Every structure is written in C-alpha cells, then in structure tokens.
Amino acid sequence: MKRKLFVAVMCATMVAGTVAAPAAVKAESKGLVGVAMPTQDLQRWNQDGENMKKELEEKGYEVDLQFAGNDVATQVSQIENMIANGDQLLVIASIEGDSLGTVLAQAKEAGIPVIAYDRLIMNTDAVSYYATFDNYLVGKTQGEFLVDALDLENQDGPFNIEFVTGDPGDNNVNFFFGGAMDVLQPYIDSGKLVVPSGQVTKDEVATAAWATETAQARFENILSSYYADGTNLDAVLASNDSTALGVENALAANYTGEYPVITGQDCDIANMPNIIDGKQAMSVFKDTRTLASKVVEMVDAIMQGGEAPVNDEETYDNGTGVIPSYLCEPVAVTVDNYKEMLIDSGYYTEDQLQ
Ligand code: BGC
Image (tube, rainbow, N blue to C red; front, side):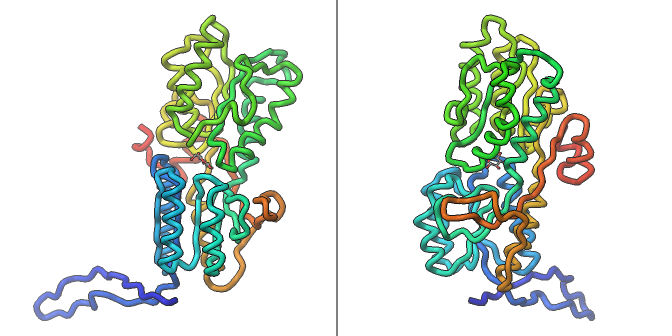
C-alpha cells in the first residue's frame, strides 16, 4: 500500500512584487512503520522511540509510535491496531517477552515482518530479526567491574555482596544476570564473596517492572534484616540504573557503613549525580542512538525487499529457533570517562547533568 506523505515546507510569505516557493511539496511515502515501546516511565524508551521516529521520517517513512505504560494488554491492543491500520513492519520492545504470541500470529498472517527491539520476543515464529545491545556482555561487564573494584584476584575477602536484577518476564534479565553470575559465581563458590541475605536466584533478586520503588523496598528489608548490626556491605550488583537508584535511596536512609561498589546500566540522567559523586561506581552505557540507527537501517533494507544486516546468528533462540540478530556494543562508564562518553559524544549536555 502506498501512502502519500506531505512534507511541509517552511517558506517566506509572499511579499508584494516577489513570489514565494510553493507552500507544500508532496513526496511518496516509503511506507508505514509501527513502533511499539513499553513505557514512557523510563528515560531510555522515550529516547529510543523518538530517535527511531525521527530517523525513519527522515528516510521517508510514516511512523506510528506507541508507548504502553508497562501494561501488557495495552501493548497487545496497540499492536492489533497497528496491524488493522495497515502498518507494513513492526518494531517492538516488548513488556513481557512471552505475551505477544497471539497478536504476532496475526501479524505473520498479514505478512508483516517484526523486529524485536532490545528485548527478545519469545515463543513465536513471527519474529524476523532481533536488534539489541550485547546483553550478555552488559552483565559480564558489570561482574568484571566488581571483580576489579574489590580486587578479588588478590584479596582474600570475604566481601559481602547483594544482587538486584529486573523484571523476570524480560528475557534480557537472563543475559544480564547470567553474564554477571558467570563472572561472580566462582568467587561465591570459593567463599571470597558472601551473600548475607542468601538471595541469589533470579526470582529472589528480581524487580517487577524494573521499578525503583520496588527495588528500594526490597533493599530496605535487606538492610534492616542483615546489615542493621553494623555488617558491612561491600558491593551490589544492580542490573540497571532504575534498580540501582532504589538501592542508593535505601542506603541513603538506612545505612551508615562503608559505602558499597554499585553497578548499573543505561546512564540515566537520574543516576548521573550519584555516578559523579561516587555513590554509583559505574553504569553500562548503551547509546540508544546507535541502536535506533541500526534498526532504521534494518527497516529500510526489509522495506526495500532486501535482508537486514545482522552480526549474530547463534545466541538468541526465542524458543522457535535462533533469531538473526544485530548486537551493538555496550561500554562501561564511570566518573573518569563520563564526560568523554556522554557529553563529548553529544548524548547529554553539561547542563542536563548539573
Ligand atoms: C533494557 C534496559 C532497561 C530495562 C528497564 C531492559 O530490557 O535492556 O536498558 O534498563 O529493560 O527498562
């Protein structure tokens, strides 16, 4: 289906004696793309959605961008509408990886390709491609950061550590937490790392909807149950910044020991003051501009009848087989390199981080 895109052209109004350029130029639309994002609550999804919309429009596509308020039923109905409206390709960052099978069967039936964005959509054969950051590397980077910060290779310890990860329905959690645990588990096994709460399984350390308040409440409990006697907390593996912030809020109100080494992910503006003050030791930076641009490239290739660029065809099996993926590279950001990574690169302005 071809749609017309009307590109508004700003032009000078007619001045007596001169003729202005035509007021509008019609251009052929290259097609309608649906972009379904999970929520506007978290900074990154706003950026991801807006970056993609802007770049797709620059390439001549029309874009139907929707945010679902972290509500699965809302996301399902938004996707149903996209299919009914004739969207020709869907880019979806799911809320719950397992909940889109039925609606995506409709997409497949209608011949609409689907790109899973950032989070893999599970147990449906309707997903054509997956684009994300290397999620295993995110977790591994966090784990290795803690190993270095505590100097686990050379120190005997034992050091006390606690774990906080994200929503158990988000497939990324398996990779974030799995990548970190692959690095840290040997030190737990050898006794160099000790977990006073005893909470180490994915379900025990999960945070529903990745909510800061939920992570904070759980961590307040941990502090009052296991650290109120003056036990020192040396490190917290937090899978992302919204959960790290919950930990930092809980510590600010309930902890007087030596401050722990805390990890995070996303370089959220809300966490930057703590990173700059040394209260959060690191965050994994995933430049959402890079991912959005890559997905726009993939969309364009598919819409032109070609194949999307991929660089991984073995890691991400969604239960129906391996989904060809493009993995972007995450990098660790600390107080030492945040200016270069975030300000010099134009991701944030200095003012935003005041
Ligand atoms: C994303 C993270 C984000 C988290 C919470 C994950 O799937 O990969 O970047 O912090 O969801 O929104």
